[in-house]
Amino acid sequence: MKLDQLAGNAALKRQLSAQADGRGLSHAYLISGPAGAGKATLAKLLAAAMVCTGQGEKPCGLCTACRKVRSGIHPDVIHVDIPEGKREILVEQVRQMRSDAWIRPNEGARKVYIIHSAQTMNPSAQNAILKLLEEGPAYAAFLLLSDNPGALLPTIRSRCEGAALVPAEGTSSPEDSLARTAALELLDLLAKRDELALYAWAVPLEKWNRGELSQLFQIAVELLRQALAPTPAAPAQVLAAAALPKKKLLEAVSALEKLRSDAEFNVGAGHLAGAMTARLGGLLDHPS
Image 1 (tube, helix red, strand yellow):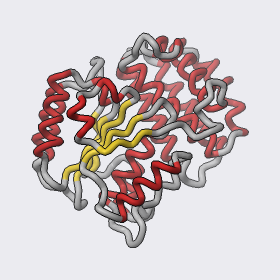
Image 2: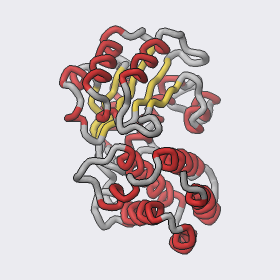
Image 3: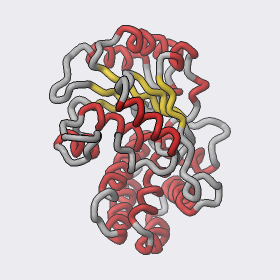
């Protein structure tokens, strides 16, 4: 299984590759780890591997299915997230997912549900998804992403393959790492709605390479997801960003995920930094 896009985590990559080559990928994974560890990256790679139509090692990264997963438009890879104006994934969303799961895939051999911030599900939602994990159709797969897996029911954890991630050494693990520091600065600027400061702050990013910018975008997405359902222990910048309208936070997440995808291609750092300020700056123009 090709997991080159995931930084570090060599032991986990060996485990998943052996599993894929042996009994095959599981129907459920609990992908855990702190912000910047690569949860969303691994989820996309697993989803792509499950729907990949290319030859040889999967995900091939080149077939139409892989490209659609990377762009977030594959009809059989469904993202479930905290609704606008809410602080948790609702039981109604899980029930809708359960109904949808029994509709066969549109294009792929499998139908994959990526559940972001899974730890925010309340007990009713957790019990509903537990039934789905136990009795769902064979072609359905569920990827639960969480920075606090202990908040999930033991019965849910026992029915998922564990995939615990750690930030790659020298990137986002230390508190003073360049990408994490920059991501926290970005959240602070968004919370202050300071568009001019955002543009000035982004100028030095033009000297970063695409890998560094990709890491920045990834960590910023994880931190913004924390801001959608903050805990008292969250960084001050996350708590400040939590005061922004949920719609703005979700739009910022979407913009940064698109930039993270663009960074995988031959796009210049200056273009990426400019696109980021244009998209995020636009979100600060009109409070809502």
